[in-house]
Image 1: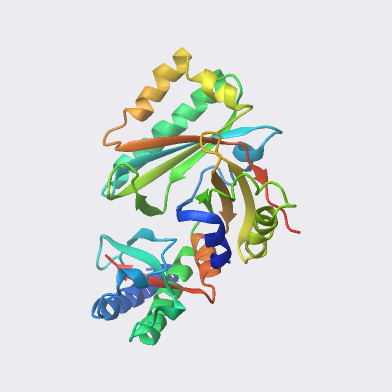
Image 2 (image 1 turned 180 degrees about the horizontal axis):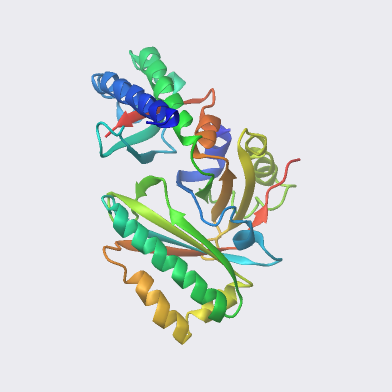
Length: 176
Length: 148
């Protein structure tokens, strides 16, 4: 078996081990989930196990106060790093994102003289400097002008996931 | 950044990661001034198998070639299966999503194409795909966000 495949299998195994630890923990109350982004992935299991596994990536606020949060957090970080290592080996991706603007916000975001316009202009600047970021195109939907669509190109899914690990939110991997 | 986003938006963002082919989608999204991108999100069952996925993708690419030769105002296309399973707006379940982006010289060109025989002949194959649960179509005239 080539070294790269062995390495991939090892990383996947690490994630599975992490999953078993996470699965034994008490469930996190729904209201403690800061979950504007929730993604479900299907990943191939190591060749020896065959088949696919499903995982969900959620984000928890640091202030959630879950009694086991530090332990959970460390395990989540380990699992997500494994995922990043895998996905960074894969192909570039385009992130298609749809955001519905608040009522008082959407008429103004095109005008940088307004408060909303200023915020909108500066909001995505950190993203434009992120490692693995390529291009960001955006526009309002003709059918619903309060909905913005963005097309963000990344070197890999892993680069985007790494970027979303901010000090305000931690990623949490839950196997389904 | 997350706090700043939630100040401006309502509800959770919808998000897909797609290994689009061809990549990057630049010619389809901002290939020429005033260009419009038609985005079609097609939802399939979560367990949609690999051979079916490959067959559907192949059919879409054949359709792209037909558009290239026959559709007035058509610029280019790119498409692919989303990495993650996402919420299906028509059901309460997760679905597998296929995203097709087509670039048109204007929104009118994209809408006019729907009244042609080519659309009737070819898109019915796409929208009549086996196990297709739901689809959404929307149009955007996009610009590039640049560093300050």
